[in-house]
Every structure is written in structure tokens, then in C-alpha cells.
Length: 341
Image (cartoon, rainbow, N blue to C red):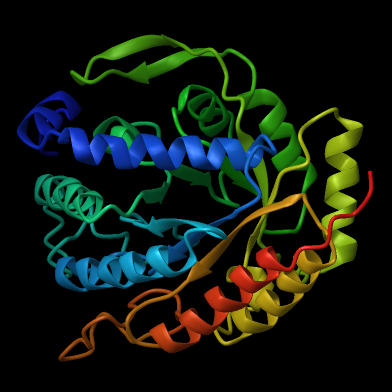
């Protein structure tokens, strides 16, 4: 057991500048406006499956700067800055836990490097996103994020629902690994209400936390062990379930995971369907998630040498295919039909 720096200490050591804070807040406002039907653009959460190399992450952020400039009237970009990986069994747990990739597990280094990387990405004007795997890490990074997700393995967790109720960003709940969308809808209902629970404050003290509820929770359709769920029939079914519970009909489509059936080129197939649904007038699809890196595919963490910009977790699209996909999404937003109510 080793003591960690507290969230307060880390934030004081690596504070945000006013410009970085503006990038965070502007993206939060843009995403909230999209979810509230005040902005017709599409949210695109895109980037590596997980971050494992500082330099390649910065290089990818520079790519997104160009994409932001090209598609600013149609798309709102948020970079996937995922520093921890959920594990069904065992494996590398992420940049926070093992930043040297050698099993040394210097978590204090991981926390410092991860926050410094977030600030450097924000300095470029690129907003950041993360999956919340536990209730403590958000204290270290939450101020630097514009969007967050709760994963398929934890959407049903009471702890994560309570956490989401106090998160300052819009937050998406994925359907379960078995395909259930109902657990995500139940999570939205829970997290949109005030909650009281045990937690950790910025000084590392165990605290009784009270939240006011998060009004910008939404469903993420990510496919399942039973197959994809991005097609119009699943999107409409989810929309009707949300309406039945008197919840906003806000849906994100995760183009990877079960929807791509773990085959990264299939993200282009998912994109074609999503783009077609948008062109045909769908207004409930408010965002997408894409796994993309500098280099296509993946390799093993034990490979020597590691390829710069290639995933060591899930396989990702390369930059060329990512540009093709983003152009298709932007075109679909431009050509969206207006369907009478």
C-alpha cells in the first residue's frame, strides 16, 4: 500500500489556465445545447481506445485541431482521453495505473502525467472526455473534462449512478454487455435526481456527499454480446422507451465494441447507417463515439518496439479512415431532412 497525492494537491500543482477552463466550459455548453435541442450539430467523441503514450496523444490532438476547423459548423469534437481500462479478467489497467507499461504501477506518476496531458490537450483548444470507472479519479480530473461515460459493466452500479448525479459534465450510460437498454434508462432516472452517499473530497477525506442531480444524462448504444444495436429499429425502440419514461430522447451511438463486433473497420459500416439515419431526419441521435488512433489496428504491450500511435488495447481506425468517417458524418448533418412533427 502506498499513499497517493490528494486531488487538491494535484490540482494546485497543475492548475488550469483561464484559456483551458474556457475550452472545457464552452464544450460543456455546446454539448448541453445539443442535448437540449438548441444546437443541430453532432457530438463526436473520438480518439484512442486508451492513452498509453504522451507524445502520440498530443499528436492525435493536433489532428483533431484540424478536424475542428474543417467541420466546426456540423460537429462538436471531444477527444477520448481514457486513462483507465475496465477489465473482465486481467490485463493492463491503463496509463494512470501503469504509466511505464512495465508493471511498476507508479500511480502517482500516472496521476500527474494524465493531468498534465489533459492540460496540454486543452491548451490546443481540444476538449476531453473520460470513462469514470471509480468514484475517486473524477476528483483529480473532473474539472478538465467536458463529457464523460459510464461503461457497460458499471451502468447498473448504484455507486456510479450516485457519482453521475454530481458530475458537472453531460454523461452517457452505455447499455449492458448483454444488450439491455433498460438498465441505462434506469441509470438516467436515478442520476437525474439528487443523491446522498459516501465519497471522497478534494482533500482525500471521506465525506457525506449531496448532489442536485445531473440533467444531461443520455443513453449510449454500444452493441452487446448478442450483436449490434445501431440500426434504425434499435434507435427507434430506445427512443420509445425513453419517451415512455418521460425522459429526453437523447442517444449516442458507440461505433466500436459490440456495434463493430470488435472489428475496427466495421466502424465505417456503423457510420454509414448512422449518417443515413441523420439524413433521413433523425433528431434523437445526438452523438457518436469512435475509436481512432494515429495508426490503424492494435498490437501487444509486450511487442518490441511499440509502434508509435498504435493501440495496445482495442484496435482503432487510422487517420485516413477517420477523416473519411468524419466527412460522412458532417455531410449527413448538412443534408439532414427536416421531418414535420
